[in-house]
Length: 292
Length: 170
Image 1: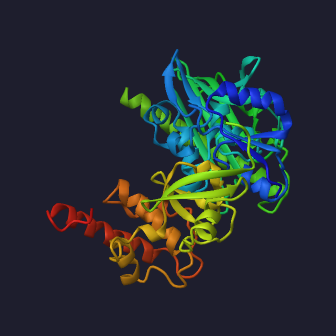
Image 2: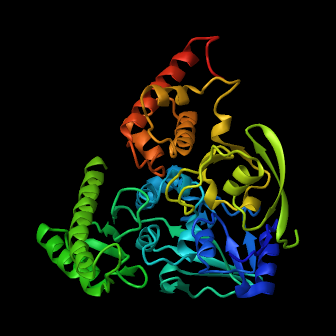
Image 3: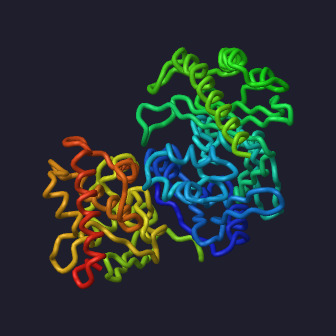
């Protein structure tokens, strides 16, 4: 691979100035677990690596009714955080099935997002929790819904002078539960064949007030199954409705056939996994209601 | 700091201070094996999948093939060579040999370092916790049951040693 220049700026401001100066020639490096592979395979040949290790972007804090997660927070940190486990349990559920401990100790939440893999395991839970992201540049910060960030495999709307600095998760209303399921060839060190997160929030009459069904690895970007979500909204989660939603969830998916699975298999698995996730989410809501 | 293509890094490896001039594409694995001659850490898949290159970086198990040398500047590194103290095998190493927890041995250094990281934070791990700790370490000849047995045995030994004053491994 080509030998890039390397810098580990001490402040975010210095990093943003370098990024502005060098633009698309410069790659930000955090955990490096994706970037180093791509450099080794000559998929990416950055002229400059900007290492964020000296910049304090690894905090998790709860303020203003939102969880603020620094982009440099590792998957291991996320997995060990009690506030995250209590408020956003689908995130640690996804971390637990992400690679293995040595990769989780290096790989960061920000990296899993900007890498923009259609199969990124942390993105479905983030989308199900309505996460937003902060993109910083020397001209200032902009915050946007994560849902607007991805445009295709490896493609995002991030500008060459921007760095992802923070992920924000709004605190969920009461009577909310979520489930994450990953289907891979094995439980560890596997890229997802299908991954998904379902999040349901109930109103006072136990009807669904908010439904999120987010599917990964079955389209050019992680997607929401909007039509299936609409079937849930306003209704109680009956067995019949679960069947109907599961059968409809695949309609917005456009999976490909690749070395991991065929298109037909992925479509079939969406129905199976959506059914399982809905059953698990409903069980969690009932458990929470009986313990209130 | 100005951008550079070669960097002088300082590492504390198994307690010894080391200074190495590395180019920016060299990995921590390369520095350990080629510059410092610590060939216990193995170069397996070179893509973060197999775990043969696992070392402790500031106390955490990482794939040293997936860490660029400059990213490790200023860090504490523990390799397989750092596990045994004063020529005595670490209880984990002894347990691995007594329970036949390896066959060809290529995965063993990384496996041992991952298990060591587990025991540093948990001296009474469950079978499930052990399997989670080695989820990033592949063994392709003898499997994982012996490893689970070995870690259980070493953990029991470490617990017994720490509850008997004067006989513990520090």
